[in-house]
Length: 135
Image (cartoon, rainbow, N blue to C red; front, top):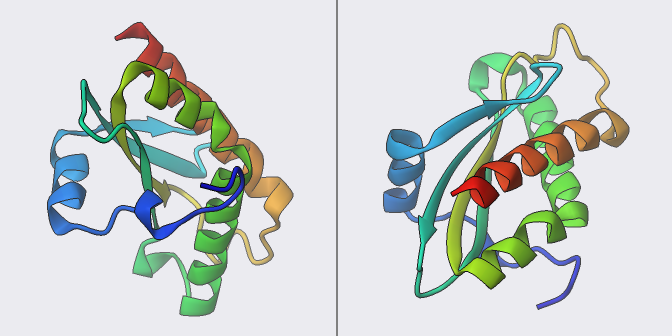
């Protein structure tokens, strides 16, 4: 796989995987409380790696704004995914990770740029990595 690519195999698509993350996963909130990450880790997995998804609630804003936030979260993860992928491959961990907006909405954050979202996503990824290393 490409170093900075984000293939279909790296995305959560199955309903069963989403239910697993939302029912048994752990929630982490970014320092500024704009974003949150919900993750579920399975050790000694047959297919180790990271699968991600991106969610923004309908109440947050109009479709164009929500899609932009998801694009920015996806791009932030794509550029920094090596933080988690190496750890998961080495320790045979299957990680399901969902990034979602927490307090971000269109009324408070009309124009959102990549340099506002990327530090939040990277911080959440580092928190997930720290939690996985403790296990």
